Length: 226
Image (cartoon, rainbow, N blue to C red; front, side):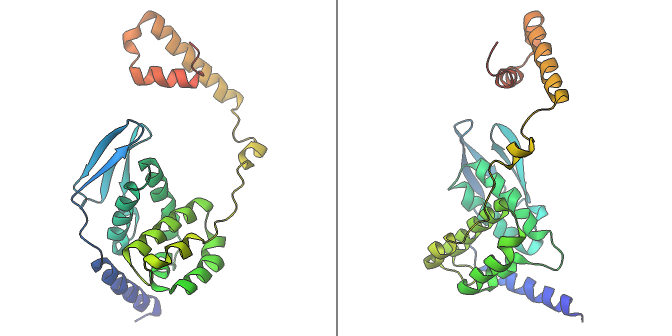
């Protein structure tokens, strides 16, 4: 049997043991849609796709994008995050965690579960800090906080402040301004003007053809001047 196959079986077995330590996932999850300022419900949490509302749009958490052996853990973390942060933030974290599983012959989540806290700090600084983006590592820090609270792997609640102090890569907040990526091109500006002109004409001639959401979007796009 090849070494990689043996290691994969070992990882799956240890991950399965960690999953058994988790409590039963709630059958219904309530979360606050702060954009609409109302409570919403996720039903059938056993499903591998949860439909959500975030920032005024319908979206989803697709757990099929994560390895089967960690899917239940990621579900628990998603539910935990949604009860503490805005659902839009939970959505960003879910998306940002995916690159953690993209590299072949690498299993960073297993490393997070199997290392002692001091070894985990060395792994963070030596591997994760240089190999992943600021956004992915923010998601990983949230996951580590969850592991601490749930006493999973080698972590426990007493290590929450320790892992919370792990440094994130510096983020250049103004890089897009310097490169000009935040500015619209001539074609994009023309497309916006054409769209606003079309909506303006419809409002004047056939107002029933313009739904409320389109009208709101037009007002925001036009700076609220109409």
